[in-house]
Image (tube, rainbow, N blue to C red):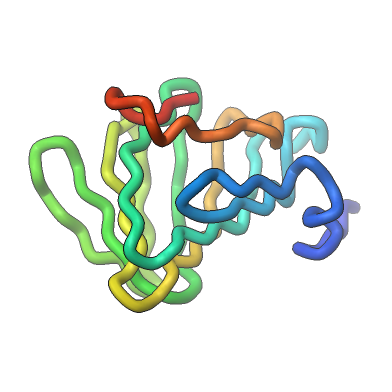
Length: 128
């Protein structure tokens, strides 16, 4: 059995400030489950161009608000209780809310190592 808290993760290199938010990598590759789980905060009033070329990702909103936009201009508001799934390694824009952070539970397959970092200044978007 694995039991750990956000506070446990904050004391390790699996707590990542990725520039426009934070990620607590609660479950990672070394745990041997075949997927990873992160508590992700996307800061209000931020925009991130992202793509996960090596992972599929599902994000379930547990609090706050924001939106995700695909590369053809479809914008999907995200609120508590919503899920979005990047099932084709989709490049996307992720935005925090105007007044609220977007708080997600993010599941990755295959699992993250836990120390990956975004490169938000890359004009092609951050990818790992």
